[in-house]
Amino acid sequence: MKSKTILHCFLFLCLSFFLTGCTSSFHKTQIAFGIKAAQGSLWDEAIFRWKKVANTNPTSVAAHNNLAVAYEKKGLLEDAEKEYRIAEKLGPNNKYVQSNYEKFKKRHKEQKKDEDEKN
Image 1 (tube, rainbow, N blue to C red):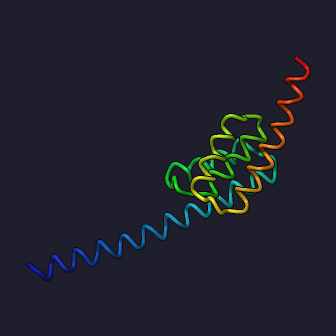
Image 2 (tube, rainbow, N blue to C red; image 1 turned 60 degrees about the vertical axis):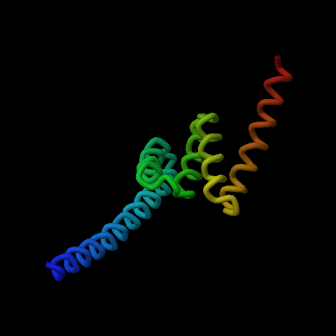
């Protein structure tokens, strides 16, 4: 009886490590696929891929940062802002997030200023 319990625990641990590795591989593949799509200006496809990662791995800084960039490219600025904030919270020292978010804020602050001056 005790040996069955040990065997079940061992099998569970092996399965857990295997599934964790598969999930990580899945996330990397989806991130890479999204990057390829974005390079071809296929923003909807890129968003689809990165959303899959963010939904299954909500702590993925790369997924949230990439979603923010894609939303910005599509003109979905509120969604971009939301994703940048999530990415910044998850990876406060991530240089890509910091750089992208600062550029985003600068571009859209100037854009908003121009719009306000027109009105």
